[in-house]
Amino acid sequence: MVALNPRLSVTHNGHNTWKLHISHVQLNDSGSYMCQVNTDPMRHQSGNLDVVVPPDILNEHEPNTLEGGVANEAGNVQLVCQATGVPEPTVQWRRENGKDIVVRTEGREKQ
Image (cartoon, rainbow, N blue to C red; front, side, top):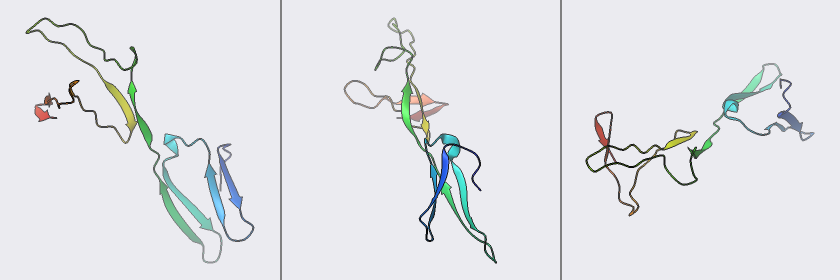
């Protein structure tokens, strides 16, 4: 049964194929779906939908710039990069020359 949701519709080719259409797919559309054929005995087929969200950098500042600051020599500075996506994106830090930066995260070294 399809709930009253304007993003969901079902089509039938007039023979033996039924299709569930989901428009404007959202993250909460992820999950299991089942096609049920009401015969005796009842038959069904299940499938799973995984919705992915492209990675994005959350930037409240100028495009392509990091929140940072100025530090005195031997002082401290913090650069902030916030990213979202499903699955969760991996964030890597690099210098302008492309070389990796080894950072400490929760007591472990990471590249």
